[in-house]
Structures are given as structure tokens and as C-alpha cells.
Image 1 (cartoon, helix red, strand yellow):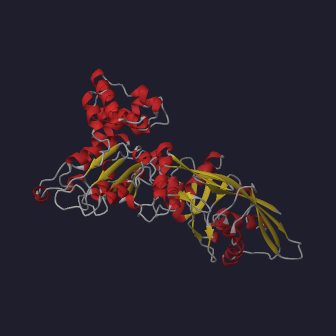
Image 2 (spheres, rainbow, N blue to C red):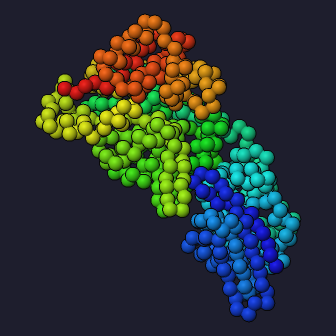
Image 3 (cartoon, one colour):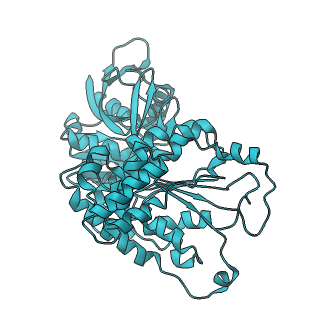
Length: 510
């Protein structure tokens, strides 16, 4: 007897519907359990998990021949998420559950030997794929039900054991559908656990630079001696980023679901913040592996990627950032296909000015030779630096400011200005669906949307010639000027906006 059960594969970040076709031959002389359709070792091992789970749930497992085909057969199948669908197919093909309950339903979950159903990765992309193909009912592990229920028009059943599921399918002990809290997203969106700018003493001009970066999604590089507060400033920056919309939160949650980084949360409600150690591999940074998984740049999508002591990262790891900074995606090619992950992140770099850290410091003498300083500074290539919009030197904070008990401007006040500027950009980009902030603009949009008055144009023309700016740098100055004008609630870019943008260009090291 043949039974067909709906399951799902995850290819990159997208779900691909899979039919689990189970054929049972009760008259076969030799017992056999065969799985075909490009299964990996974890899928092949499901034979033993399914057999033990069915028996230990008090159900029958006739010791005859089973052939399980995972269709389409040309898509590689990875992981244990097919266990539940295979078990349901075995039970349906042996007349232990009615076939009609399998229509318009998808089954996801890993099986324990005692019949318990365990958490799996990528439930949200799977639920989305089911929704797109017209399936309206999904059975998932109990802990994955909140994640699957994020999508509307889906009936989600949280399942704890295989025996409980069989009783539900026979309508003996119905499982209650998971009820999603409509206010869940707003309840979980909080900035209370983030560093507040009011706790940072001094450094007002650095805070201003970070405010501009947050308002227009511009990349930042901070250079300063050890202990001046570069890391603290970077870690306070998420508190001034605009709040995630529900659609953005779902987009980020898909990435974290596939990477299994949700840590029990149903939805990512804060903008991501990633600060990988400098020993991270190239694959860990941009993604990779035999089965490609998102790297730190994709886990920072719509959030912030902070590389502390960036000069200690390998040169290959830094240079591989150039493509995602420009294209906002990462493409990983393998023999079996290409995988694309989103990577629209705000990059913040921080490093010392020299190996000892005290070059041009006014309190301690630098012990480095000019050759050592030049070699250290050359670890960041010109093309990478050219992709950074804001370059700032972070000085030491005076003792008087450190001891001052007065609190500076809070992150909440700064975030209000940032969100107001972002709102102007949203209105401006209504006819540009792929643009979300000024930092995303290409050369064509810059020429159309960055309108300068005559004084600002003259200043920019003079600066381009004297500073010998590249075409990319020229466009980045314009985008930065546009953001400063948005913070100033000005429709046209003024001369003071261009002047401030120009001062964030990198200083020539002596």
C-alpha cells in the first residue's frame, strides 16, 4: 500500500516541498527498509529511529519491506526533520492511520527512540513553503510551534509524542492548535538590555558620527588607543538603531531559524548584533560548510556587524567582506548548486592606530617604528576602506568628564531622531522598492535623489579635486550628506551638510 506525506527541505533560506512516498509490501519474503531520493547519513539513520519510535509508542511495525522515496529525488535531503513524516507514512501504509488525514497537512520533526518529537532547524522557512503551496495544517514539535505560527492562515499543531499525534489523527484525543499572541512582537521588542549612550562619558562627536551612521545605514571605522571606549560605543549603537518592522523581523528570524540561533525565541524582535572574534574563519564570517549555513554577515542582516581589533582578522576574511558590502547578499557556490544568503548589515570597524596602540596618543609614547606603523595600517586595504562612509578618531576622555555624574543624552532621544530620518527616507524611496536607507543607494539613485544647492555643489567640486576622491568616495560623500540633511529635516543638501560629511573621510597618516 502506498502513502504520501508532505515534508519540506531547506535549501539556503528557502523551503522546498518534499513528498515522502512510503510503499509497504506485506508479502515480501525478505524484510527491508530502504530510503531513496538523495538522503544524507542523518536521513538514512531515520530508519532505526522510526522503527524504535513506532514500537515504543505501542504501535505495530510489521517486519516486511518498505521503500521510502523522498521526491523530488534531485534535491539533497539533510538532517532529521523527515523522521516524523516517514513514521506517519509507515503508519498510513500499514493501515494504522487513515489516509485522508494526510491531505493538506505537513509533518515536521525529529523522533526520539521513545516516540518523543524533538526540535528541528528551519521550521519558519518550511512553514512559509507550505503556505505558498496551499497547505493549511502543519504538525511541528511543541517548542517550534510559536515560530511556525508567526505566519497567518496556518493551523499549527504542537506535538509532543508520536502516540499523541496518532490519537489526534483518529480524533480520540484532539490536540489544541497553537494560538499565536497578536501582541507577541511588541511585547518582546525591548531596548532595556542594551548599553545606553547616557552611560558613555564624553565622546560627543563620536556619538554624532554613530547617530548619522544609524540614520542612513552607513559603515563606520573607529581608530583610537586602547581603552578610549571604541568597543563600548559600538556596543551602545544597537540601542539607537530604528525598531524592526514585523516583516523585517520575520526576514531575520528565517536566517536565525536555519542557523538554529533562536535560543527558544519564536521571533527576533531586536536588530541583530554580531561581534565575532578575530580568529573566526572565512567560512564562519561569510557562511559556508559542506551544507552551506549563514555566517556572521548574514546573522547581522538588517543589524550591525562589529569587528573589534579588525586589523587582527586575516586579510582574506576582511577582503571577502567587500562583495556583501556592495551587493547586500552572499553567494556560496558548491558542486551541487549555489546558495544565496542576505547580508544587508551595518559594518562597524574598530582598531588601534599602531601595534602598540599609542601612535599620536597625547599621554603615552609610541614604541613602534614607521615601518611597523605602515605595515599595521596596510592590513586594511584601500578598496575596503573606500567602502566605509565614516572614519573617526576616538580620543581619550578627560578625567573631569569621567568623574562627571551628569548623564549625557540618552539612546531613546537619539533613536527618535534616527527613526524620524528613516521615515523621510522611506517616503523618498516609495518608488524604489529595493532601497531602505540612504546607504543602500546606487550611483543612479544618488544622482537623482541627492540634490545640492549651489554653495554645497561648489564645496563638493572643490573637495573632490583637492582630496582626489574616487568615484565611489564621491558617491559616499553624497549619500552621507543626504543623511545629515535628513537628520536636519532639510529637503535639499546644504553646504554645512557636505562640510560635515567631508570631515568623516579618512585622514592621511603621517
